[in-house]
Amino acid sequence: MLNFTDQLNEIISLENYPKRIISLVPSQTELLFDLGLSENIVGITKFCIHPKEQIKNINNHHIKIIGGTKNFNFEQIKALSPDLIIGNKEENYETGILELKNHYPVFMSDIYDLNDALQMIKSVGNITNTTIKAENICNEITKEFADFLATKSSEKSPKSKEKVAYFIWNNPMMVATTNTFIDNMLQLIGFENAFSDLVRYPCVSEEAIIKANPDVIFLSSEPFPFKEKHISYFKGIYPHAHIQVVDGELFSWYGSRLKYAAKYFREIAPSPKGEQYICT
Image (cartoon, one colour):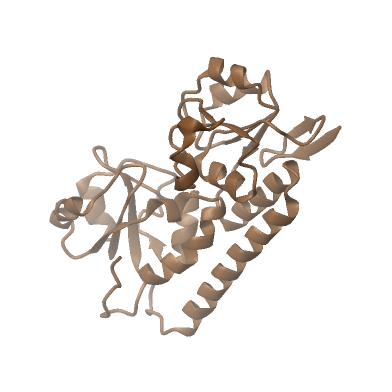
């Protein structure tokens, strides 16, 4: 019997390394592919879009869609006979996960910062017998972030951190605040969260934005698909802020996509007061 511990400190017992895996989280689906497990993946969600080349041919593949991250098709999951399901505390819904745990081994991640993400990657590598590949991915991510932070520390920095408001939804307007992976990424880049007095993903009003007084407003490309057309609306609320649409995947996907995050963050890191941002 093989025993593993997930990030909720629960024991997952397997008779053998898994051959039929269902992923309930897009970023962890991409990780499984990058670990070389494409033939072992039997189910993913409709939001799993990476790696694009392999996902786009899914209709001609052995992989099936099992619903969304918060509305599982239990009959489809049963038909796939998984020997491991991989989920996440934040992205999936508790009642659905508890139901799945009654029938299948379920590995759950719980991620708030970069270290949690690296631990998850290594743990998934261990439970799927791809330890060396997982270590290589972690080493690449660690090096990219170390190089980024070393470069950033050597550059001239503003005397005080610029405040950023990171929007994830529109109507109602929702922001990512403390105790989130996104906030940890913002801190690593060098920003202060303009809504640091709030927790998780609260709704905010126009008045709250003005009161928060952000220097920068980031409009995430996901889960709400903010576009350039939304910039003028936010400019009307707070005309003094630098406003930019950013790649939400690189701020919130905590799997192997982190390999590309540090390079992207170099382009949007805070600059000394008075200098221009590099817009992407």
